[in-house]
Length: 537
Image (tube, rainbow, N blue to C red; front, side, top):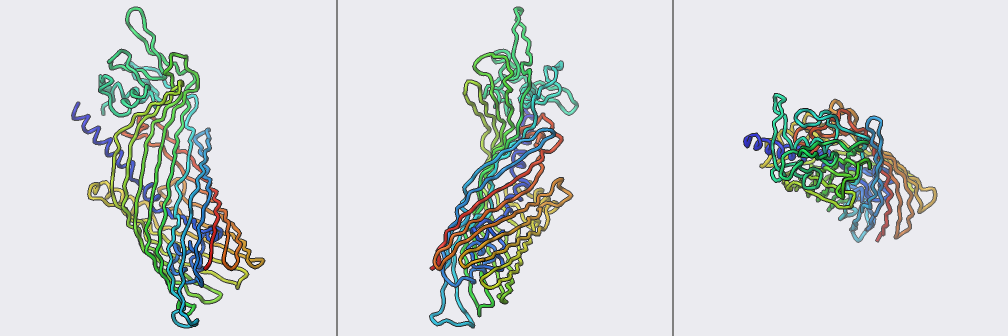
């Protein structure tokens, strides 16, 4: 029994590590949906060949050489992420507001004392911060209403288990071996482990007798007879409502040091060294809610409980970018190359149960925190851009970006075998993506601009491994007001994408003992408004 318990602990620990690192992490670390200044956002960030914008430096560093003066700007924003979940005949909605700081930075321009139009026209240095991804979103999935369990079998186990608490109750009694035979654990409350221990500590389970080894849950009650025997009965007459809730928070951002030069007003070159910061937190909770159908039996009745997994990731990395722009007035052609970002990642992961009782008491019990340190290499990226500048009246721009997701890689001396499997999955299941952005700006009168744009983000996972492609679409618009020394821009962006979510009920997971064959169909909509304040010197 000790030998079996040892391998059970090892398998659960390994499962928690595997749950923490998977292709979802690769997609998240690779995510790059630049927001930046309101001018850039209003044109869907199609600025690779245009330059002259502080966000364009993160797309193509040669854009710094378009500047004729020095400039400083910053961009606060407000974002609303909306989610819709469909599971069978159920549907649910959720949303989350956040207030990301999209961009701040400045550019210094240096010119010779004597103006010239050949040779080295100007040199430039810029320091910028651009937010490259936003992870803030809440998703609520209604999984079941009026859920009840089946009958008890001869071993005291519930047949047809559909509630998580009943599955945890079964775990407190024992397990089934490979031959399908029930093996009792005969554990007293002090000997319980894992989910059963957490449920006991949060008043979700109680022993039938003090220090006994037979348990009943908050969904049940006990009748004591005069002969000293007892009967457990199901008091959950109207069933339980079940939700799966995911709460995410975080961002990635890039601090860039950019250098550039304007040669003969035709060849513009630039390069940058960039520090990437990353922070992500996710709490996934499976919630079972009392439908107010219990017979009152004391102050410890349950309102609801959450069985949760908590993941925290933070990282820092470095990359470099090279770019050129050919100014063939009125045509501009741009190209840039982004090296992979080499990241160091620190991660924490733990699980637990929180109970909320009708007397407003709250109890929480969780596992010890598992900490992991590892390295990640993002894909390299290549971009090509073309723009048409029609004097001071209008401009059109189109950007193309290629990202080789198969070139990304996890590495660690401590988890070499596990990461080899994950890297094999990356090579097999991920692909080269092709993203497109297009934007237009029109100035009907001097100092006032109207802007619009659209973008398509390709799915990083091969089609044969998906039942819903992870493509994203974005539509944008904006206005701008400028005079000689000051400018103010406003932009709005709408982004839409779909996904399917499968609840993890595998052995060792928080939802072990349940079964959900169908995926949850998800729709995400993001609305963002940004406001740029800028000065020219």
